[in-house]
Image 1 (cartoon, rainbow, N blue to C red):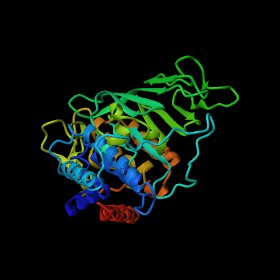
Image 2: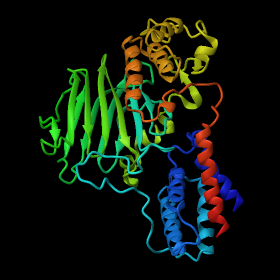
Image 3: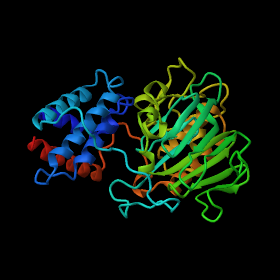
Length: 417
């Protein structure tokens, strides 16, 4: 039992450390749901056993659904054994009702979505996701990745909204791609809106949905509407009834996207919708920056440079020109990026990578505008900046406190099993 507790602690408290190994194994999500379902329970309360058994059955069902992708995963197998042990100790039947692990939809039709808890707190009511450049992805969990993801991929897919992007290679001989098409489907919801589709492709950034309208729902309520900020270059889509804001830009030949989504809305999906780049990041096989390393030259080149060594080694680190399509050296790329991006955080390094990879100077403004859109939509200012280091960063103090809280809850529950 102590081993199970330790593994559950690792799963909850150090998701970044296991990100590559567990990118397709959703045991972390199952465990987090179980903790949230049982956090309010106490053995002294009437009906504790029944509710605890419901939560265990939901936990068991969740692990079964992800069993195929978790094959060989030690945390997964420890969790399943622990569930079986707890069900035996509490005399829980394997068949019966389960607790609902997914939040309910906003209750008030067409009213502007509000945080039901009345504040951001440790876990903010809204989440942020962004995609820009070659392409760089910032997930709902603030993980930052650079991926290949050639072709059509789902960014967001839940009961209210689907967002899909299509990426193409930017230059011959490079793994990097960039976005040329974005399709959004706002699904019909009560009296707030009929189904609305918004689609943008390179050089066609419309200020209307595909049916020619600029809003959904009643004209007075404006529960879903489009605002054109710069013709053909910048639009914002506001779905007030579900609290979603999406910014789309065209910079150069390619598109960028930034989205602010309530946590409850983002989590309203089932296991048929488990491939979402914003939720779980890119599959391991689609990552360019595995373990922080990026191939800056054509495939097969021996010159690979980790992100953190850009600024540690400085100009003249031996990269030279990444290919015949780029006129940038490491020094000139860093100079160009620093004109707009004064702080050498992840957006600065993404800019350097894009210039060295493509030679397209437009990617400087792409990184800059992606940063500004993030600052506009991201709900937690303390998480805006992501800095790359040679070693894994220490966990945030607030995160450690939450981990301790989760562990104490698990200890408390296991003591009564």
